[in-house]
Amino acid sequence: QVQLVESGGGLVQAGGSLRLSCAASGRTFRTYSMGWFRQAPGKDREFVAAFSWSGGNTVYANSVKGRFTISRDNAKNTVYLQMNSLKPEDTAVYYCAAGTLVVPTTTPASYNYWGRGTQVTVSS
View 1 (cartoon, helix red, strand yellow):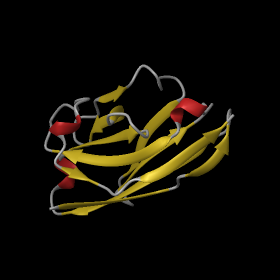
View 2 (view 1 turned 180 degrees about the vertical axis):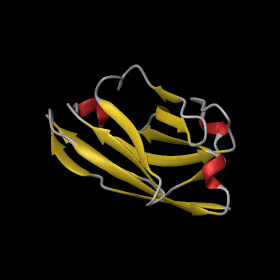
View 3 (view 1 turned 45 degrees about the vertical axis):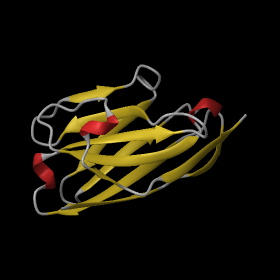
View 4 (view 1 turned 90 degrees about the vertical axis):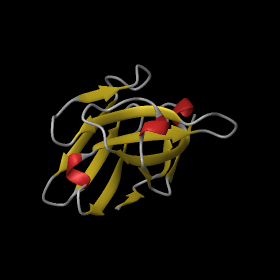
């Protein structure tokens, strides 16, 4: 079992930055791939970024490439999503996810565990 708890969301003006955190716990989560997804009202959940904890493969959605960075702190068992140059279209609930994947995928159904999400709102 893996537990995920997100934090760091909030309200920010366009062009601003936020850093989301995902505290992970569980017996084997370090063999998993970890990812961030987001869901805006009335839209499907979409992939943002992911990496494999053991292999180091990192993947980004085209819409966030160059603006967002996924990273980890092994000592704190925490995954981060640094979001810069935020746009109003980045407004969504952001979810942390973990999956038993050697190579991270962009498909939500591939991930086994999810956090409750944290709201990010970007004003214009």
